[in-house]
Image (cartoon, rainbow, N blue to C red; front, side, top):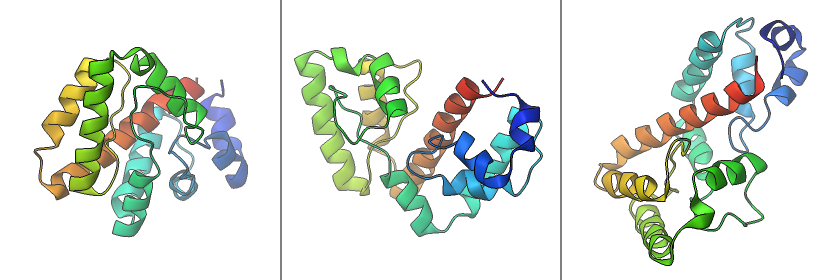
Length: 167
């Protein structure tokens, strides 16, 4: 684990490398936030990262959302990053019942059809039943509200990943 002093002292490219993967296939978020260093605390870093997300263009936000994998009953897809695979495994998605797996697949299909991007949820603390329930709830949202929800979940995922890396 890295300390705040060590993290803030890194050259920009090493700072980005140290936090690579905090945003799924989107290190540009960390690179832009790096310009606001030093942070000195998780709260300051998270504020800077959220500011980057808010200021990103619509196309950048959509690309970030689409960089996330589907939540699936079997996390064995080659496209999953190690972090995503671990998060999905810890949420119990590998142990879904056949009925849960079928429901999740159907919801993923409906969700993508409605919104044009994958259902994103910071799954830490969730189980298959709560993940399915959240997807069902969010399917009822209007597209702009759901896009905002997806970006909020991405920020929560990043926060969990950062807390795992920084002392």
